[in-house]
Structure formats: C-alpha cells, structure tokens
Length: 164
Length: 123
Image (cartoon, rainbow over all chains, first blue to last red; front, side):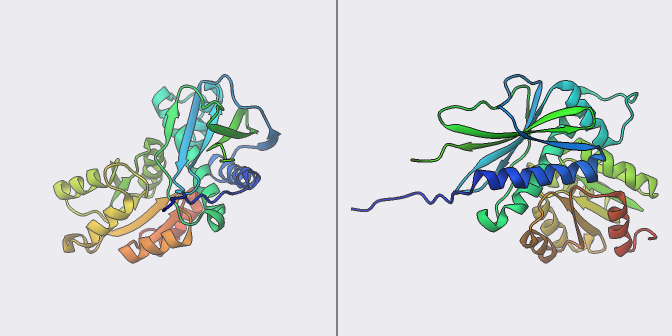
C-alpha cells in the first residue's frame, strides 16, 4: 500500500510576526516617512473599511499577509506613499491601489526575512477588499497593531490551521 | 530620453513616473509585461524600462527575457523595481538580462544612484 503524505514545513508563527513587524517599520521609514509606533498583539479585526492581503505562495505553508484599516487610515498612508498633501485629491481607487502596494512591500520584506525557513517562494497579486479575513475552523490569525502618523493599522498573518 | 514604467500598481507608476519626469525623462506607463511589449512594438524602444516582477498577464522576468531575445531592443536599459528581495531573484533577473535591480521600498536617493550607475542621470 502506498500512502501519500503532503509535505508541510511549519514555521513558528512568532517568527512571522517578528519579521512582519520589522518589515512594516522599514516600509514606514523608507517609503512612507511616517512616525511609527509598533503595538503588541491585538484581536482579529471585526470592523474595518479596507483590507489589503498578499498571498505568500509557499507550497508547504501558504499564508496571507494583510493590512486592515478604516478608510481614514487607509487614505492617510496612501497619501504618504504618494507624497500627497491632505489637500490633494485622492480617489478611492487610487487610495486602495496605494494601500495594496504598501501591503505588497511589507509582504515582500517579510517573505525575504523568512526565506531561510520557507525557501524561495513567490508573492501573489494584492487583493484589496472592503472587509477583512476572520478566523474560522480552517484559518488562524496572528495580529498586531501599529500607528503610522495618524493611521491605526492591524497587520494580519492568516494561515491554515495546523494539522493535529 | 524616454522611459517606460511597467507596474500593475498605479501608485507605483505615479511615484516612479513623477521622479523620472523631474529627472527629464519623457515617461509612458504599462500595467504588465504584455502591455509593455505592445507599446514597444507601436512606439519603438525606450532608453529605460523600470520593471516590476509580479504582474498579471506577463510578469517582469518574462518581459525582460522577451526584450533581450529581440535585437531591436538591445540598447534598452532594464531595471527591475520589485518587492522580490531574495538574492536568487536578483540573480535570475540579471541572468535574464536586467541591467539593474532595486528592491521596494526605496528612497529617491537610491533611485538616483541606480540610474547614475546606468549612465542615465548625473549622480
């Protein structure tokens, strides 16, 4: 009898959080130039206007790295990325696109920091949604908060629940 | 000089386009590699293409490979501008024919340095 066992390289969730925290700080300093306060673990979002999620295409451990924020916070960091003043017009579509790009940068740096454990894997295209990914029987979330300028963000690492 | 910014993010096209215009480039934009190849076919080669990696339709690596396979574009400078930060990715892009590689996020100073190394702007 032949049995097939899926390969599954499980990394420490805390390592992902640490990598994501450093990555967010790097993006905030370099691309956004906003004062940044990294907060501790926070509950999974239950209300928000916009979530930007980037799939990390690890065959052993696929997950998504996301940023969730209300609309005002989304617009604040989008303006920072685009180097726009508060008076400059910013359409909802352009704000969402910039928000997705910020999540993309955070995910890229996080993935690179984790490459020693997960190997060389790709990123998927950004998914920007009105809403958020909620924990469920199949999805577990690790979340931490951050304040970038006047924006309050929740950074989410969503992964399939581990097999027991 | 003419530059083509290839990125599926409008935000990144705006940021890079604004910088290049300030540096004196005439700038056009494409939202993925296939779009960029179509534009090159219609308007001819550019002096510089800034190329994202992860895009729909045709990714940046495939675009670089396609451009380097066509002798008509031999003089074009190609620089990857991407969130793909692993050394193996950099090597793959250089092997495919990219002239430079810059990781997002970047500063304007880093962009100036890269373009200076390509001989396209004064340091």
